[in-house]
Length: 51
Image 1 (cartoon, rainbow, N blue to C red):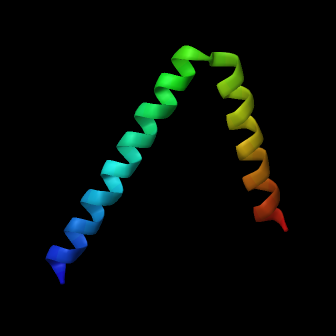
Image 2 (image 1 turned 90 degrees about the vertical axis):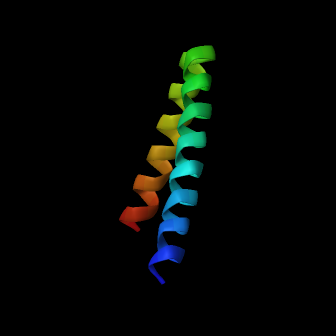
């Protein structure tokens, strides 16, 4: 049970790490576009949580 949990956490962290790397590369390459996209996503999440 615990082994399965640690495997899941490891996979989860790997996915997050990969996403962070991709986002970081995007921010470095296209700062304005990325900020706009992030702002839109955050706004969308905020609105969906309010409803």
